[in-house]
Length: 480
Image 1: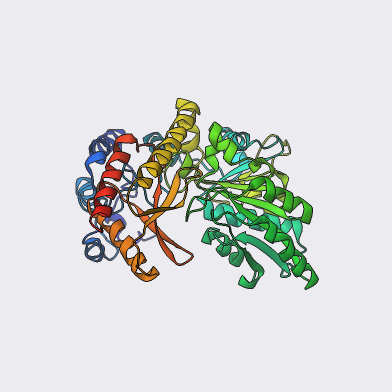
Image 2: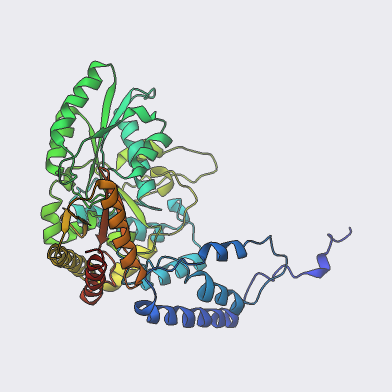
């Protein structure tokens, strides 16, 4: 028998590395990471000047030969990583900050190198249990009963999709196109996307108006439900917010739960940003009623400061996840009959999945939940301090008071029309960001350009917030 073509030109083991080489590569990597972390406070809060040109220069075809690891580290740390938003830095006050705890990175290294399969329980029972513990911890945080189930996802968008599909399966027949969803006009766009992906026409998503605080007007829901039922439609889902992306608004969750109960609606709370503040005393007061929801989205990559790609969905009746997602195949091992065990492939859309639970489990086991709670309390304090400082500036309107750790404001000047005011506020925001000590973003609500500040990074402390206020004062003074 002849040898395969080019069989003598390569070693089939050349993808393997020795323990000594692993130590060398790990050492080089850690040196780079340590230097990166040490310099984080001095790095620009955002630097995308020339980033498009850099991206174009990096386009390339499939390489046949390898490149030394040192050169690849140079590309990453010296060129690619710096040209971005510094989402892991203390000055990142934009959008919803992510943390990037180093401990979670170590967990990912362990999970990726050991590469155990956790999609089915039988493949790695102990590791699946560790992740199931995390899901239980999340349910305990929000006050869910023992029958609830917490499932880690890639983020809030996937969590919202799973929640919507589960609600659809629980509340609607197989022919579900008459189903109607009710969402705040401030809802995250992933809710509408989830409805689209779940098969609902866009017209079946009803936008419920909000009040002056951008909270859902619960009194407006009942008439909408009645009108839809009279038209032969089937109302089935209400989505409330525990901290909107626009202004940080927290809906009256107790009132939303009452409306949902009175009208037979599944209540889903999108707490991707704000839900973890339930760990604090002030947060529990603001989020009262969260535990009454049928399902809740939480993003550990926000409120628990973990790396991006770590979301979660919690469902009060955990068996509903199984009813919505369980499909048998002959090649799959049997699902464990013991109700204490979880088979992730039977309660989620995923069979192949990474062992993402370790990046949550390891930091919490290392530190306990106390430091996370104290860090969240600090963010509440910093947002409250910042809004009072901004309020003292001349010609400032606080548009959204911080119900949690997100606030929105704008500069106002007598005699200027809305278009001119929007342009003025854009220039103020750009002037702040040009100093590169902090990075803030905007939103547009009811036609007004608003400047947002979201305090959520575990690395953001009073010193950085003082820098932010210095830069805001200077930028506002330039417009007077």
